[in-house]
Image 1 (cartoon, rainbow, N blue to C red):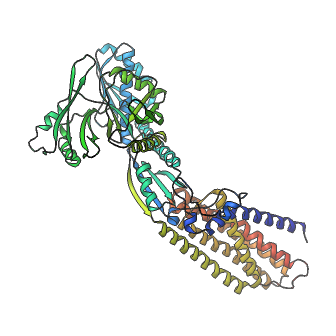
Image 2: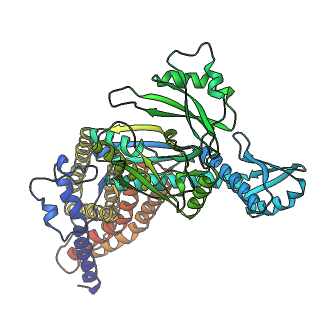
Image 3: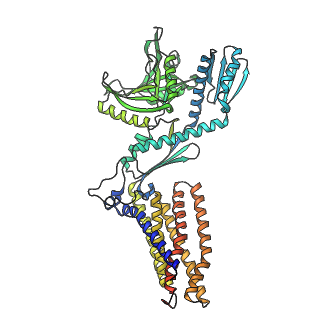
Length: 604
């Protein structure tokens, strides 16, 4: 026996031993019943007795995961409002210009964004200050362009390239934030990735119907787009539209009051109603009368625990000097004096400077804390707040336990990352767990039927060589499961189709080899020469077929969506393994049988 045969035998044995080691966790996992293996949000399903998989602690931790089409779950596509991210960046830039000019001793008359476009209009008090303004604007580099339509006027425009970058950054930050938020809740095997230009695809597998609702409400629903906006306390906008003769009777005009920094009384008008829909419709009717640099927010207030909520309006400046992307930490604290829980927040260095400047320049003004476009509260700024620390109180007539739970959820959402721009659902699809289990059973049945049919045909048509081919096919599947397990791949229904196609590719390779051997035998070659010649001549065809299929799998994975990627993964890995197993294993056995005097002819 040639020495190379023993090396090939050692290689096959080593490969199969390693494959069995990595494939066992997946095999044992799928051997469990569906209810036992289904994972829950934040915790694993705990059977009454320890499973065999748990007992074998020496096995690898990685295994094949099931996609939502095989175990149920939630599929969401969330859109990111990148327009708001761009406009917020423009507003902050306008504030920075104002502060920089003030520090230089040449304050500007005004610097504000132009409607809904990324342009800052700057009005100087003196034309002599234009050169100083240009020097400050030059610090912003190539991201902005400046024009001077007048001696005291300047237009600072965001370039198209920088605008595209801000939009892309907003989506990427939102992607990271959502991933961190979901990871903190312990959702098993999430798939979260960018889809298109402004969308994020989220797939959470293994969730029951109740868990889907919890995830949507506590994780996805609470986008936590945090903004700090100054309140307009002098406008008569609400008083004017209150005079509308068609105003619903449920909408009334009220005032709240406090003393400003000079000690004078401030009376802020606002509208209120117990009918939220009617109030929103009334505000929409008068939206054209709203100044372009102002926005209206709503706040829900409950007079007492039994009363219906009352909705109040707030007129705020459109610009947002500080948003949640400057937030670094959020945690629950207890105020012993007020005997209530609240959420404490801290900002990064730049955010801390902005927050301190904001509170210093607006003492005795109200600043609205806006969470997800809803005014959470609007406290009066009593004085400068240094060190970048703030808090959100969770008001309302709730029990201490309810307030604590709300504070914990809000802290998790904020700590996981406040979104740089609002997100909204674009597509939602839920797959029931029972439907997923049914897909697993049918997919497994289809694969076994295909495998059984191949086994019978191969053994009847190619006899002993067919048995060897079937053994090579089984080895191929074990290696494929091991490879997918080691990669922690997610198996979907299209992935099972990829497995079935891989089986076909493996059998195709064996058929090419066996038919080549038959041709050699018909040419009156001896068994040993026929086997060697058949494998040598078949290898180029097998390599060509597997290589082109692997390239197709790469293209499908690169440009396909989730299901297509699942198909491409199993197909690509399968054909690469098939190139080795379909050639190595059958030849190893046939070489053993034909070398020496073991057989006088090949059973093929």
